[in-house]
Amino acid sequence: MSVRTRIGSSLKSRTKSAMQAQKRRAWLLRVARQRQGLSRSDAGVRQVSFDGEPLWGRVVDGFTAAGTAADNLGLVADA
Image (cartoon, rainbow, N blue to C red; front, side):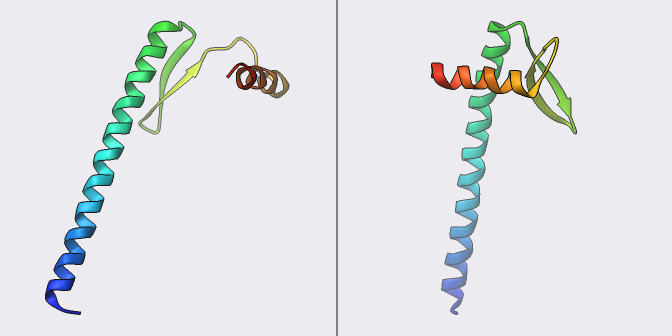
Protein backbone atom coordinates (compact mmCIF):
# COMPACT_ATOMS: atom_id res chain seq x y z
CA MET A 1 0.00 0.00 0.00
CA SER A 2 1.41 3.36 -0.95
CA VAL A 3 1.86 6.26 1.41
CA ARG A 4 -0.73 8.25 -0.56
CA THR A 5 -3.29 5.45 -0.18
CA ARG A 6 -2.64 5.15 3.58
CA ILE A 7 -2.93 8.91 4.10
CA GLY A 8 -6.15 9.01 2.05
CA SER A 9 -7.64 6.13 4.05
CA SER A 10 -6.66 7.76 7.33
CA LEU A 11 -8.15 11.09 6.29
CA LYS A 12 -11.40 9.45 5.17
CA SER A 13 -11.65 7.57 8.45
CA ARG A 14 -11.08 10.71 10.54
CA THR A 15 -13.56 12.70 8.43
CA LYS A 16 -16.19 9.97 8.81
CA SER A 17 -15.63 9.86 12.59
CA ALA A 18 -15.94 13.64 12.86
CA MET A 19 -19.17 13.62 10.85
CA GLN A 20 -20.62 10.86 13.04
CA ALA A 21 -19.71 12.81 16.17
CA GLN A 22 -21.34 15.94 14.74
CA LYS A 23 -24.53 14.01 13.91
CA ARG A 24 -24.58 12.56 17.43
CA ARG A 25 -24.24 16.03 18.99
CA ALA A 26 -27.06 17.36 16.79
CA TRP A 27 -29.27 14.41 17.76
CA LEU A 28 -28.54 14.92 21.47
CA LEU A 29 -29.44 18.61 21.16
CA ARG A 30 -32.77 17.78 19.45
CA VAL A 31 -33.60 15.18 22.09
CA ALA A 32 -32.71 17.56 24.92
CA ARG A 33 -35.04 20.22 23.48
CA GLN A 34 -37.87 17.70 23.12
CA ARG A 35 -37.40 16.50 26.69
CA GLN A 36 -37.37 20.05 28.03
CA GLY A 37 -40.64 20.73 26.21
CA LEU A 38 -42.13 17.55 27.62
CA SER A 39 -41.08 18.36 31.17
CA ARG A 40 -42.64 21.83 30.89
CA SER A 41 -45.91 20.50 29.49
CA ASP A 42 -46.36 17.51 31.80
CA ALA A 43 -45.94 17.83 35.56
CA GLY A 44 -45.67 14.03 35.93
CA VAL A 45 -42.38 13.85 34.02
CA ARG A 46 -39.17 14.08 36.04
CA GLN A 47 -35.47 13.94 35.28
CA VAL A 48 -33.18 11.70 37.32
CA SER A 49 -29.55 10.70 36.91
CA PHE A 50 -28.24 7.14 36.81
CA ASP A 51 -24.52 6.51 36.41
CA GLY A 52 -24.13 10.15 35.44
CA GLU A 53 -26.64 9.85 32.58
CA PRO A 54 -29.79 11.97 32.65
CA LEU A 55 -32.96 9.89 32.34
CA TRP A 56 -36.57 11.04 32.03
CA GLY A 57 -39.57 9.25 33.42
CA ARG A 58 -43.09 9.61 34.63
CA VAL A 59 -44.00 9.58 38.32
CA VAL A 60 -46.61 6.89 39.03
CA ASP A 61 -48.52 5.82 42.13
CA GLY A 62 -48.58 2.16 41.16
CA PHE A 63 -47.17 -0.14 38.51
CA THR A 64 -48.16 -3.46 37.00
CA ALA A 65 -46.83 -5.06 33.83
CA ALA A 66 -50.38 -5.69 32.58
CA GLY A 67 -51.42 -2.09 33.22
CA THR A 68 -48.34 -0.77 31.45
CA ALA A 69 -48.93 -3.06 28.47
CA ALA A 70 -52.53 -1.81 28.23
CA ASP A 71 -51.39 1.83 28.43
CA ASN A 72 -48.76 1.25 25.73
CA LEU A 73 -51.30 -0.46 23.49
CA GLY A 74 -53.57 2.57 23.86
CA LEU A 75 -50.70 4.92 22.90
CA VAL A 76 -49.87 2.85 19.82
CA ALA A 77 -53.52 2.63 18.79
CA ASP A 78 -53.89 6.41 19.14
CA ALA A 79 -50.80 7.02 17.01
